[in-house]
Image 1 (tube, helix red, strand yellow):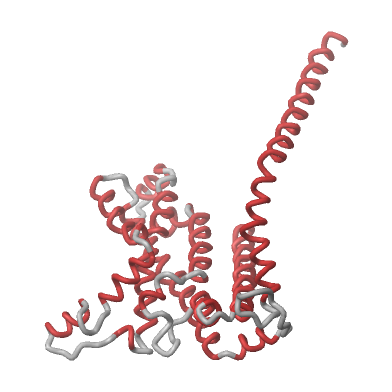
Image 2 (cartoon, rainbow, N blue to C red; image 1 turned 135 degrees about the vertical axis):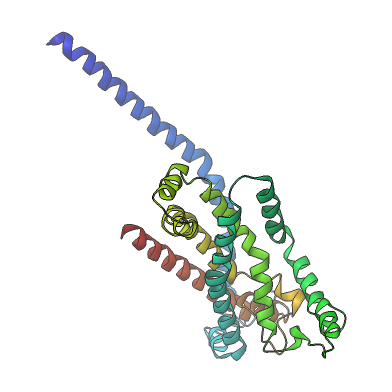
Length: 310
């Protein structure tokens, strides 16, 4: 009995020492790596948010120290402003278009070019190039494309013998044009997420489905897409958060016009807050944007978690 219990005791002692060493290693790693991350997060996230919340209760132009306390008046003005309602609705439309048009387009193209061939590599590069292009540059390029006097749109209408249309100066068509550019600009990013996920799907499952008589469309719907569900969830999160942050494309294309009809929440914040030196009002808009982003992120996380548990 004694000779049988000694090896077991040694193994238990060795396992206990290993657990203690791993625990102390994790603690040491946390003590080394966590403080720098917390300092950076506090400097670039927590403190700016606290400042924005503080400034939002003042009527302040950014010079000197804020002293004209107005309480919640900035928030009341914000919620009563019709342009803010337009910006909020435009941001909502961007989220809808990103989820229902941009992501399906990216997924469809990913299913076509995910295999590793020279031709597919070329197509991936072509589709991904718009994402590499800087947002301001993309906005400037498309503002020229839609120009009703000298752009490609004007040339096409003139070639057809029709009077040119100033797309970006039309309240009805300006924001659809912006949404088209945003879909063109960012679908390549989502496509690359799907391609990476599709390449990890076991080929044996695909071959087994084909042997059972499944057609390519059925393989995609019932084998590949369910297997990359996590990638789709991540892509959807990026699409929503990115839609809340759209700024660099709109400013060079329309600067929020015509008649403030193409503002999103961020361009509204910039135009009516920073540009007009109304820092308190802009800070209130920033706080509202932060609350919306956190609320949407939490709702999306809970919704996707429930789907995974179902």
